[in-house]
Image (cartoon, rainbow, N blue to C red):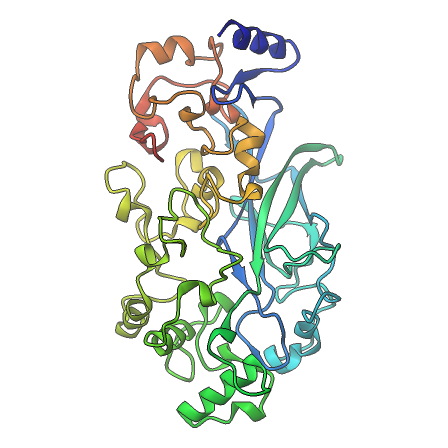
Length: 429
């Protein structure tokens, strides 16, 4: 213990730090600004090709919140710019067959195609994020799962820099930009020498009397509503795309990871939520294929709009119920988005993927705890031992030891009711 204490004192001579119990890595409490970045869905799927059947284009959204450290911390929405760029991934058009998105754009989406490497919303692979209310966002980044070295990796990385009006860097961070083309339709859709997507169109024609095989390329969302692409309602077919796909494959021995990528990608990667089945524990939260389709048909679920709620499982934790707001859109303590502290959907900290854990490690020296977790240093302090001991050790503006709360806060109140989730956390969260 003496060695740890000496280490902390020496570090404090340079910049204010606190020590992490797990590995003695300092908790970073330096600088006036803190930036958090997260992906909105946890995994974006995209087609590997765009000349036959298209489910989803390259399209990824990253949100950013900037805070000025203080008592209390304040969300920053003016006086700064937020720049972003993909790490070692500067193009999409010239990789594999992804260029077909731009080549076939007019046939698929109508209108004039955007410039190469610019997505559906006019967003490029690098640039400045516009402000959207209380956060910054880049919507529809056309990133693909192949970097500039030609390596396929569904967990690409974005770097974010916050700058002042003079171009000085105030804060930086990195986040995962997950995107995968591992849609394993070939498990079932193989016939002779035809391609997988041609076979799907043929099956569709045989089952429903359509003539899609002669209309390639075909965008599924032209007939089947897909809120993931911004459409409203079930579309001209009368069935949402999610309803049609889940319903048709419910008796075909299809598994979640056949379509939601995949056996290699394994997009659900939050260690606390994966379960022991090896399939991402998808059914526990979303229901099986029959349930997904039937609840859409009955009108009780709209795909991408009605999703599982944290409070369904975490019913004993105060402040977790987000009402009608989805986790990805919800805010909590100090107007911070839930994802800013807990991580992206399907990748809540700790994640199986190292890239997902960048920010907890950056700010707290711990890859296994949420931002601001007392568990970074304590085994049993989540909901226990509040009061005088905390006040003397961590409270006030000049505490004996700074803790993970000091990543954003410059002073910590001993009034536990004002802490996140009303201080009813559990060790396992």
